[in-house]
Length: 294
Image 1 (spheres, rainbow, N blue to C red):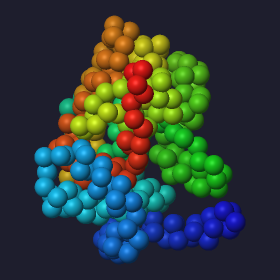
Image 2: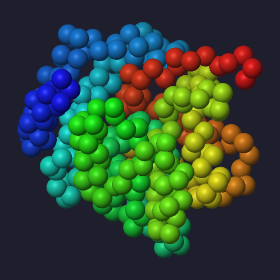
Image 3: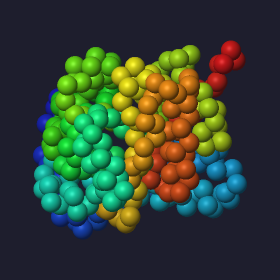
Image 4: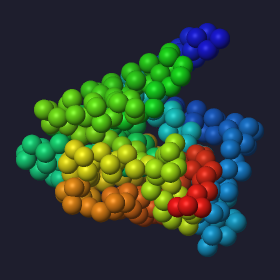
């Protein structure tokens, strides 16, 4: 059945990717009405997450953020499909680096230093990967969770690899990073997902809530010794994003346990507070409670 659904959906996905941006966003407005007003997809989850994250905000303010989040979410999904057919020039027009980020990456490349990029599910992180692959001398690797459905997994891989990005399945992260040590590369970790191993997670307060943080970024950075660069994708206006970056840790091996996890979590928190509507609030980020022994 999933294969049948895939082949039914595939022509529509490609058709969406071919739409001019103004038409694409008109369709996004229609999808927003369906998802938000008709289906109500995860509205209570989003409301609860926002309410707990911003207890100082009024109910009306929370609902305004929720509404703008759903408008952004439908844009994001359609923008992701656009990767299938968009040109390099158009991609770089819609998602680009600020000057400081570009200087940092060029400097690291000139020093022949491979890096770890850590970021969150904020802004169009899919487009950010395209921009990195198009503009940087580093070969970009992105850590991802393979989907169970092979057809849709292959489609997602195709979209992410359009401009030269390479993918690493999460279970193979350290092994594949070691195998690629001879080349100049950047490995991107999206580190705000809920870790599967709560006992091995780093626990902190994130957006006013007890939160487990995936420690893989920190553990691998310390083992492999790559500098850790924090990156953020900010939406400038509809369909346009700028990517900023800053050196988070020059020498991970000199850090204490939990230090890198705390640092990138704090930076992401700052960026979410600055532009809350572009973070993935529909994710069940706080479904676990801190174990008593931690």
